[in-house]
Length: 275
Image (cartoon, rainbow, N blue to C red; front, top):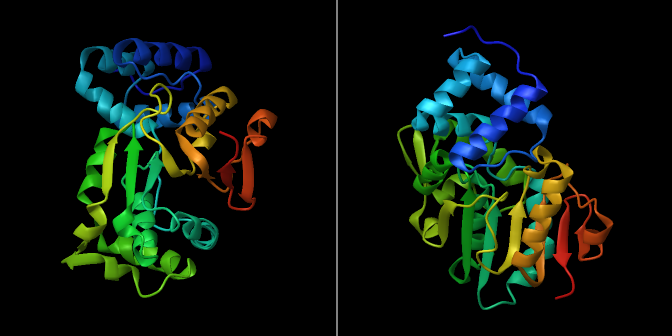
């Protein structure tokens, strides 16, 4: 194989077209700067040149899962940005408690930490039995991790501070069964949670939700794709449903700003207005 080299914008465009043709995944509207960093990482890890990378993708379909795992960003943690969970607890959960049943979509859920954080929050608010969480991602490998709900004890200990800062009672470990160096989320929290594949780029509305969380995903999309996904979320929300974006993400489009009410500007929590 050739030694790893740089990849230029023309080669990235060719690679995106190849992946779309072979596997149906469209990365055209992903941030090119982010894609370039992730593709370079694959090339360095696997010691591949651009030519080798194309050869692997064309001739070894199983390699695509490895490629997909590396270029989709799966950085996550439980109760990430604790102030967001405080705002959710104070400004959104009371609204959800007025429903007989709530459906929640955690989009781009990676290995499940955010979906389970929401499950714990709902459990502590007494809403677990009348809520259902759908966690979706395009990466089947991380979804399998999410379904297991097993995390290293080292990770759980690192999440404990977030949990306390979110203002929740007790301890995060109260929601896990610990065995040796791993912790498994309690079954009662998994029962109302379903993880499945959904591609924000190409898939459509699959349910009507009272709350959608998609945090730290938009930053990897170019503006056109952000607007396409916002339209998807708007159409997936029940009237007066809530949309939560990451702290570095916002609704830039004037047309979309008119369709949402700002509930918490710092935490980027919005409420759908209109039908």
